[in-house]
Every structure is written in C-alpha cells, then in structure tokens.
Image 1 (tube, helix red, strand yellow):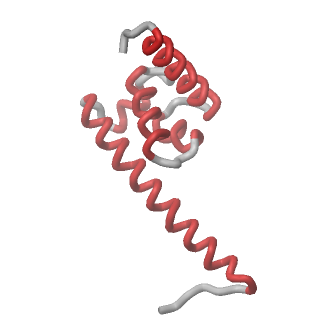
Image 2 (cartoon, helix red, strand yellow):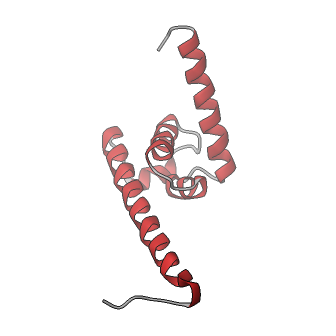
Image 3 (cartoon, helix red, strand yellow):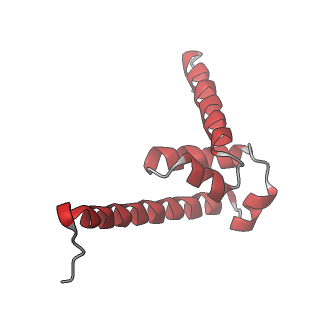
Length: 106
C-alpha cells in the first residue's frame, strides 16, 4: 500500500481530510437528489426558481442538518446566490419555526 508521507505526516492528514470531504459531498449530493425527486424537480429547475424559494430553503435546511457541507456549497449547488443569503434564509426559517412552536402550531 502506497502512502503519502512528509515530515510530521501532514500530507497523510490532508489525504484523510480530502477523503472525508468527498464522502460528505457524496452524501450531500444524494440528499439533494432525494429532495429534488420529492418535489418533482430536476437539477435544471434550481436555476429557474427564486433564490429564496421555499423548496430550496427546505433542501438547504436538510443539508445543514444532515451534512457538514458549507453554506457556500449549498448556495452554489442550489443556486441561491451568496452564502450570506442562504444563512439569512435559514435563520428566518428557524425563527418562523420557533414562533410556530411557541404558539403551539407545530
């Protein structure tokens, strides 16, 4: 087995980080495919929907809950504009959910 070593083993550590990131992205892509299927969309439909579309926000919430992909990754793959826009929409959705819970609506 060929391993990549350097002084202190930092290259090996980076190799494992790359492997983990690939695994996380694979999981995120699977989740995205599941969510698209659930709403009856194709990947191309993400381009034509509003940045703050409720379906996109639901997908982003699931991706944030179940994976460690970045907001930048979510913004890019869901075509939601900047990562700060995604952050704001997720915050708004959480606040709305908290308010509904307090009122006993959920």
